[in-house]
Image (cartoon, rainbow, N blue to C red; front, side, top):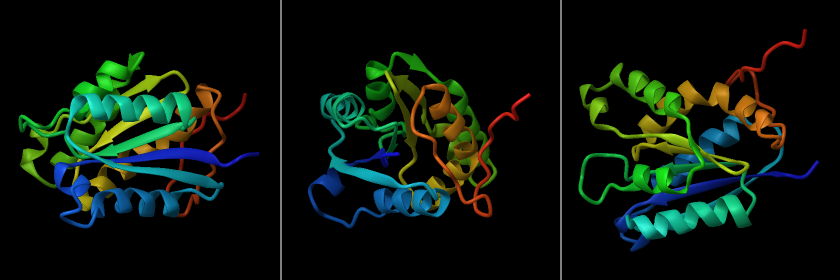
Length: 177
């Protein structure tokens, strides 16, 4: 079986300009490395907060790089430059609103400003795209909440079988009858 390819996209003008170290993208890679026991390869990108660049990157990762999962960080707030959800919606065939709903519900346990977050998720061809917030602590909290559904979602799209360290995260897969 070949390695699963997972796109990791940091959306930030500061990160793309090299002004600071990209802690958010690295946090996603670290969390996924803890979760996954099957072989996987990150396809890592740091891009500016520009909708056309975000759209082009998501399309490339889904259509050309064959990423079964694409996880973005940043650009999900109410600021005028925060356009990651709009870019995601523009390139997806179908939206998966439950992901954003669950992430906001989980984040509300920690901060009242979680209602300002606009994370979303959607499907483009054989790829699941999930938007996460930009802070490493919030990334972990949100992934802990939604990741149990991700391997089964990818199964349903005939993607690679993602095996997890069940001592760290237990994916949900229905029992065979």
